[in-house]
Length: 116
Length: 113
Image 1 (cartoon, each protein chain N blue to C red):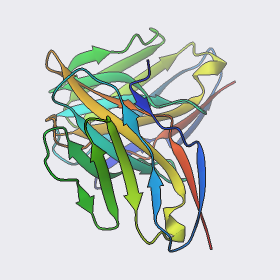
Image 2: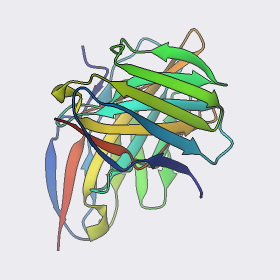
Image 3: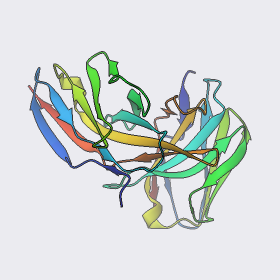
Image 4: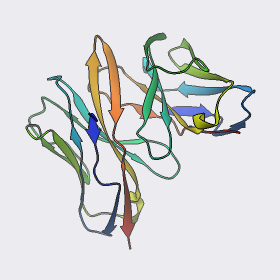
């Protein structure tokens, strides 16, 4: 079974609208971390936002917020007031630690295109 | 230089060549990683180093050989590669604790002919 599932291979959104990118995860570890990264066409992975499994509140960073629903094992990224520069690939990732070794597992990504 | 740098940015090599990818982090982190990103596939973790010691080898073929001489530098030595090894190779670093994000370099786009 996939550890990280992103069901939307591509999305088109009108500029200034809000967009939700879906991410579900699978783990039996009670302690884990969830990340969202943005990858523009230049290739570099840019960290956006982090949510710890024990965090009581949803994480927010500027226009980015994470809709964390622990019971449903989902960690959707919400981008408010989308901009043309938001067009990129977006990856959800989960960090687990096994025997002291940390591992970051990525989903297949969602290609977001913002339409002017 | 700041952040995580990778050289070269692009590399084309034949299957009989030997080449090396270099990664350098200027963030004072203690953990470094190599990832492979192939088209239409999730990022695959290849190697993890903590305090210069290799702590994870994710079943990577021996034609890929990592080297971590110190906490700031990470190399990936390549030899007798196959065309299916063509991909974007990303280096990352982190402080090594659960809550800290990994910072990625710009990657090396490798093409094996």
